[in-house]
Image 1 (cartoon, rainbow, N blue to C red):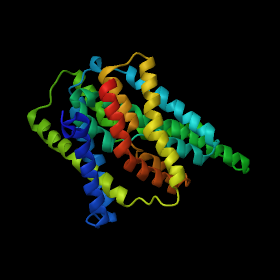
Image 2: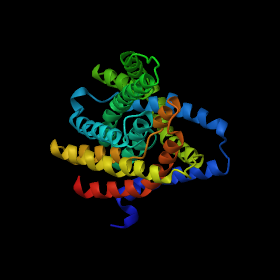
Image 3: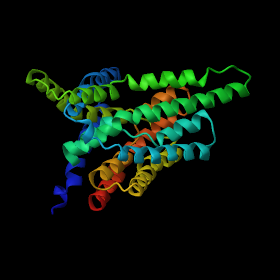
Image 4: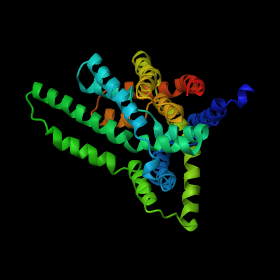
Amino acid sequence: MNFAQHPVVASLTPVFLLIALGFLAGRLQWIRDSSIKDLSNLVFLLLIPALLFRTMSAVRFEQLDLLPVAAYFLAALTLLGVSIAWRGFNRGSVVMALAGTFSNMVMLGITLVELAYGKAGLVTLLTLVSVHALILLTVGSIVLELAVAREARAGGERAPHVLATAWSAFKGALIHPIPLPILCGLLFAQTGWTLPTVVDRPLQLLGSAFGPIALVLVGVTLARTPMAGHLRQALWITASKNLVLPVLVGASAWAMGISGLPLTVMVVAAALPIGANVFLFAQRYEVAQEITTASMGLSTVLALFTLSLVMLLMSYIG
């Protein structure tokens, strides 16, 4: 088989070409800083909900396999705990540990998995996506609030109750433009109805626009990401995210007897670069912002090589 025709190369090439075009557009100021937020809102509030709802609106509960999702979170939460313990329990270590475990499954993963593994692979990924942010961001919020409370007590201040913070984080993660349309689509599918053409066609067009716009936006954001001065720490975090997590997820899935496409999708999802939600935590808690930004940029750049390697290996293992 010609190398350029290999399924891994064929699926990765358009993804990274679109990111590169976005990077070029960002460098040349074709897309200004003031427009990035508007583009991001377009992707997250309109395009991605349309794609997620339409995809899941034809999936019955009996088609869902939750065992691979369990294997994924067993590995991810273990790595999160070990990373926090390794750096010491404080706000900075929690944010950096989150960066080492939180994948960019929406902006990068959805398009890549659909290109590489088709509708079946996408359904497996979206099953994970539906609870990915809900679980990791809620756990991250709780642990961060515990770290804040610890620091506050050390300084003689009063900290908010952690249960109130946990409930707030849970609601915020559930009522969100990613898990909400997935859950609504699943509930619609259980009725046995099908979407009328007059509704289905616009959703299809909106969903089709998501992939290219989201990937170009990743490139534009990357062009604005400074990486100098924090490369050593960013490299450790990138190694955790791009290499250690997929190995742990693969081992966890293998131990649970998972094989084939579900194993491949879980490992590839784990190998995706760092997701942008981690930076929101760094901003909110005013800690490790520059390190997080540098790690996101480095993780995305190096994913060109690490993700290619993981997908190539899984094409033979899975």
